[in-house]
Image: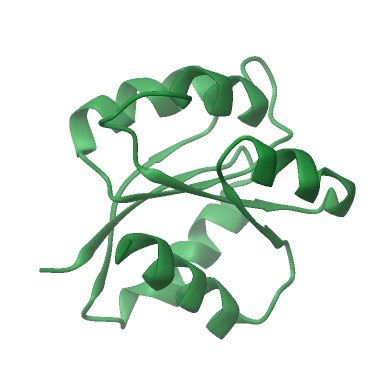
Length: 119
C-alpha cells in the first residue's frame, strides 16, 4: 500500500514539483493539496494522509498554525516541513516535525517521505 502524501504550499510550482517527483514512485501517492493552513486542515481530514509536506510561509493560516493544530492529535499525519527558512529547523523539530530545506535533492525529499511514512 503506498504512502499517502498531502502537500500544503502556496506556491503552485512547488506543489507541482512535489507531485512530479512522486508521480513515478509506486510506493508514494499524492492524495491532496492545499494553498494555505486552513484549507490544509480541511483537506487532511478528508484525505487520510500518512505524510504532510508543509511549507511554513503562506498567506492567512501558515505552516506554524498547521503544526500547532496538529500537535497532540493521534490521527495526525507525520509532517515534513519543506521551507527556505533554514533557521526554523530547530523549532520545527521541537514541534515534532522533520525539516528539509527547499531546493534539497529530489532523492532527499523521497527518502524523508518514506522514512516518515514507515514510522
